[in-house]
Length: 297
Image 1 (cartoon, rainbow, N blue to C red):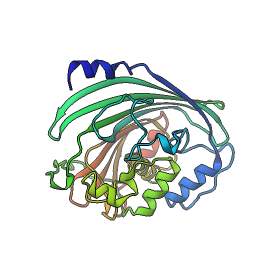
Image 2 (image 1 turned 90 degrees about the vertical axis):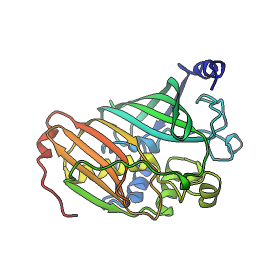
Image 3 (image 1 turned 180 degrees about the vertical axis):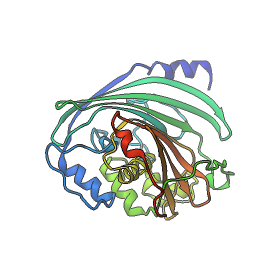
């Protein structure tokens, strides 16, 4: 990428997009069913679980505004990076106040930075977006989203980097993702990126070995299990990084350990590598629930 092209992309820094939505019980019930929760009912006033805001404030793009990969065409809100492959690389969150079912909410998204890098797989461009969401009942969340653009290549021929696990999990749950789970989550988030539901496209065009599990879905599963293992847990902050692709029909483990006010969370793939790592901190008073014994695996 030459300086002229980078200067052009940096013109997007500061660009703002606003939207509003209603935190409905219907969408929350559908996600609860998708996650196979035992209790799926929600009513007005119930607390929206962490990261479930992703099923609201959905993209508003006509079918004609999509590219062949399912993403929006270049030059809309996000900068027109010409690299063909786009992925959700990671994010961090400040849970300032809980959202409730029945709450009206406003979201403001701002492009904060555009950074080119050179990686083992070639040229990369990282785009940082800050989302601030505030609700009529006091809900308040700040999210920093990191998006990476890269060249297309046959991922099946790549030698995956090893991310050895150093922590001993206090809880570890096996999940076998299938195309129905991925389709439902894509539908709930209005995500038309074809790598999550179009197997032929995913393998033949983008060179993956199977359908990719959404990074936000993996992050949601990490928190879901942490809350199950630590009843009453209330998060202050959360940060995750996608390290390697997780594919459908391949078992993975949602793992975690807790100490005082901190949680270490990770997705362990069947080949022993880490697909996602995350850290979280709990709000004052929540650390009393983090005295944890190792659960059965």
